[in-house]
Length: 138
Image (tube, rainbow, N blue to C red; front, top):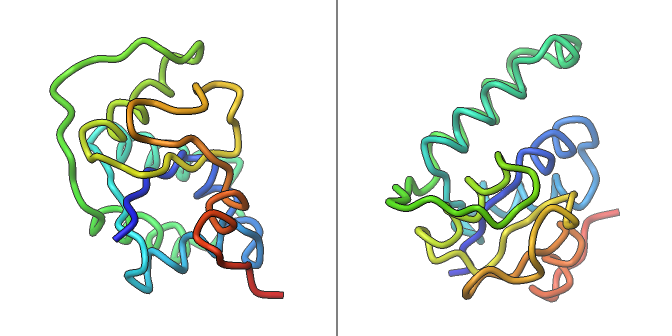
């Protein structure tokens, strides 16, 4: 099964736009078509970002559902630190991708990541769907 790490901006986009490519990626996770890898540091970032005041208009049930889904993902424990991204917190995603042997790191902000990290390709949600020969629902 295809293994993925999802940048926080993918979750935010899926939360705010329920019919976009990011939401389709999350649907594939819930449908067990993708294995979502999450480290403790990434889960903490998800929770911190989704609980920011600027998302207070989002129903708490949506945020709780996203966090529950993340908590049920495959937990990975990186045992090393990476300093490749110019945005330091993004290095946690590279660490998770390597520790989880992810096929893809999915992000809406590719400029903060190398095109590839070890065996992981860095792609947008749309590029992931294309790579998997899937399309997002209309």
